[in-house]
Length: 340
Image 1: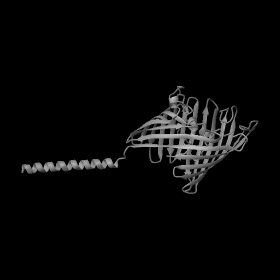
Image 2: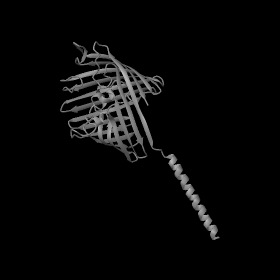
Image 3: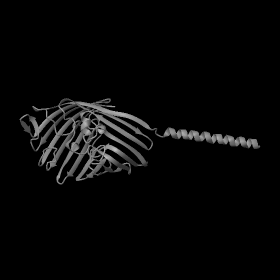
Image 4: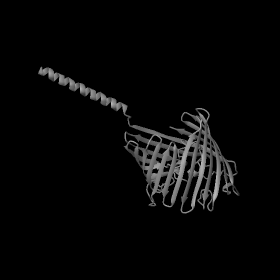
């Protein structure tokens, strides 16, 4: 009887052990495994203007003449159960423009470099350098519908180095709070100024704030699906620095998807600067209105974008020949983008 009892206990122990092992295996299988990813883009383009001199609009990227290079963008990322990192480097003219605030050779190719940790459900802390949260457009040519960029994006911040906390308050509401170095200073805070940032997300619409030494920018970014094939993006911003100097603008981005491989979109932007901000004129006030019509054909990882753009300014800011300036400019771009 005693031996039978011992055999029963032994059998029960083995059964419980096997059950716990199976349960642990099932739990491990249901949990998402850590992932290591390598991705990026390569882009190149041809640009011409309908003038004697191949002058370009005064915005970032797509501003070189003839056959020109964009950038090669390589992103390495790791996503664990609670933590991860992103290392994002860029090479080429577009990449150099994107990281123009770098002063050390070691950081002249760093577009983003940050690590993050999820301290609780819906709470993530990120430390490092990351692209800006302001504006509708981004640095990556594959993530923008239009290949050329707006004045609002070009003269706003590109990146921030600091720490930020992202809070997912509900499925449709989010909040970000951050403390950063001076805008676009990638590797360190050389000016000893501190900037503060905040973003409130409500049902796909975002209110953004960036405040620093003699700098304040308020920004709204959002959009609406007006139908299954028609989307309207919106961006409005105003920035003030060093007293009354600054800029403001608004842009609409209607986009129509005609098939699985083709879409067409328009960007209409009104941009205004005060007291010689420097985007349009060196002194005084100036305005610019631009229309950019872009087609986007996608085949696998390849994107082909033909684009026609018209700029009309309040001053003769476009050097259309060695001896002549004009207050308007028409230009054409054909871009090829490959994402992987």
